[in-house]
Each structure stands twice: as C-alpha cells, then as structure tokens.
Length: 289
Image (cartoon, rainbow, N blue to C red):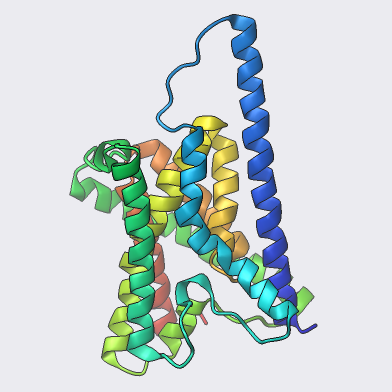
C-alpha cells in the first residue's frame, strides 16, 4: 500500500469515527434531556432546530461527506485515485470546463441547503443566521482581523506541525485539490475561475452548510463545544487532504467561535474567503508550496 492510499484510509477512518461520535452524542444528549425533563416535570424549551433537521442536514452534507468514502473504496479496489468531492467530474474534462462544473457542484449543494431551510422548514435564512446583524464595514474589519489570526495559527503554526509529523509517517503527500487546480492553471480564465471557486463559492456554501445548518442543528440538540468539535472534524475531512486535516479542524473551530461571538454568518464567510485568498497570494508569491 503506497502512502497516498494509506492517507485515504486514514481520512476514511477519521470520518467514520466522527460520524459515530456525532450519532452517539446526539443519542446521549437526547436521553439526558429526556431524563432531566422527566425529573423536573417541566416542558422542554422550544429550539430553533429539531430532530427532523438531523435527517435533512445530511442530504446536502453527504454531497461532501461521500468524498473520503469514495476515495477509500476506489483505492481498495485498486482502480486508482478518486476525484475529491469538489472535482467529481470525468478526467476527460479539464481546465475551465472542470472548474465550471465544480462551481456548479457547489451551487447545487448551496441551493439544496438553502431550499431545505427556507422552503422545507419555512425559516428565513437572513434572520436565522443573523445576516443583517452587522454592517458590511464591520464584517470586513472583523473578518480580516480574525482571518489574519487564523492564518497565523492554522496556516503556519498548526500547519507546519501537521506537515512535519505526517511527513515522518507517510513521506511527502499530495497537496489539496484546489491547490493543484491553481498550480495547473494554464489560462487567465482558469485562474479566475479557480480563485472564484476558492474565495467565493466554497466560503459561501461551506459556511451556510457547516457553520449554519450542521452546527446550528447539532448545537441545538447537544452542546456548543461538542457541536463545534464534531462539525469541525467533518468540515476538515471533506477537503480530502490528510496534511490539511488538523489545520482545517482548528480553523473550523475558530470560524465557529467567530460565528458565536458575532451571531452573524457573514463573519465566518468573510474569514473563510480571506483565509483562502491569503493562501493563494502566498502560494503565487512562492511563500508556500
């Protein structure tokens, strides 16, 4: 088994453990609440999200969560590498067409998530995620300041530790797929589409799904710390890159802290966009690989 295949199995195992932890946590917290309710004789307080959301949230989430599973299954059958969730397209398509299909993929997941919240559950996304709680100027300032802190902590400190540790176990592993797309950009259009995917499509859709719907649902039914850790693990693993697993896990928790502190989803979206944009600038300047 080569190093890349072994890394895929590690990601697959990590996702399974995280999903099991999520299921056990939901069950344990649910039983605890029921016992407390029974002993106190009080009615349970109304929650924004409910058990039905646990079912619904997995429809858009599985569009991303299927990635580590598919990669491990393909590797086990010896058929080569599977494309990550962001690039589930035929290898015969490349360049700008591939990127357009990736953007379409994110748009589909985003519309599905929005539709489940707005149309199925009849909730207003604007009110639910505090999209009008802060002025645009304040969002930009907070996002940049928090983004710089996240870049220093996750991109350099945690990232350097993770890379050094994993290189000792597996040797040099492949970079993330978006990084490959940027490095292989052969035209201005391809470069622009790659930047749009990394700095607009991914932050909007991933934050709506992970920080908004998944975290909101799990937090409502369990505890904020448990929700932040578990959803952070899922957020990290769907990016399909073992060296980035720990940095992205920490980054996800920081995004959640920023969301909790401001109660405005635009802040983690802005942080996410800044984080990706800064990494692109550093990559293009040759500061990072």
